Length: 184
Ligand SMILES: Cc1cc2nc3c(=O)[nH]c(=O)nc-3n(C[C@H](O)[C@H](O)[C@H](O)COP(=O)(O)O)c2cc1C
Image 1 (cartoon, rainbow, N blue to C red):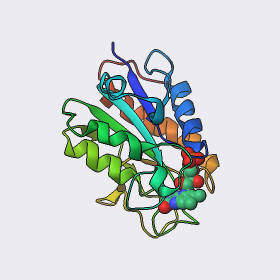
Image 2: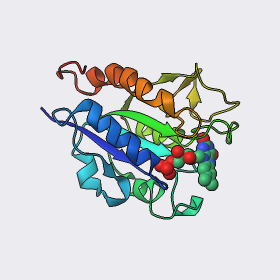
Image 3: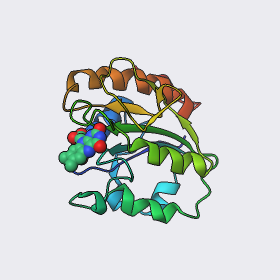
Image 4: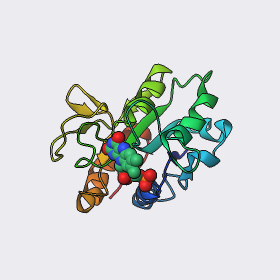
């Protein structure tokens, strides 16, 4: 059985930690080790039909990267290599980190760019998530009253992350890997 590929961008390490947590909850039978998107080639990425992709938010208008003040390359520098890629047949779940108190008017908004890119190039997007339990005014990553992926806030709600991940992974795993055994 092919596995789930987990890729993340990060600036200060929180999204990496969440990606590692996802990997430990899924186990190495279902997923490969998470990889920083700034050390990933297009070929490595495109070998997966099932993907979990994580991004922090650093502004609204673009994905995180050097132009948003990140210290290292991030999603912004990676996505151009997918320009000509046919992503149909791929199943993608997104998670996004943000800070809903400090950035209440643009909470976890960067997820929308990954959503548009992958949906626009033919991928199925799974793992939409309720906005219940969060306190924010606006997020560009909300469509039809739901986040386009799992929103996480390691600054103001870190105690909720593990439970959210468990529920979300139980929801998306059968969609990402239809023949996989249920995770505990
Ligand atoms: C300069 C700056 C801009 C930020 N912009 C946003 C934002 O627009 N929306 C949001 O929800 N969080 C924003 N954040 C919070 C980060 O997304 C959050 O701390 C995240 O956990 C960082 O993830 P990382 O450690 O993987 O880089 C910002 C943080 C900084 C320092």
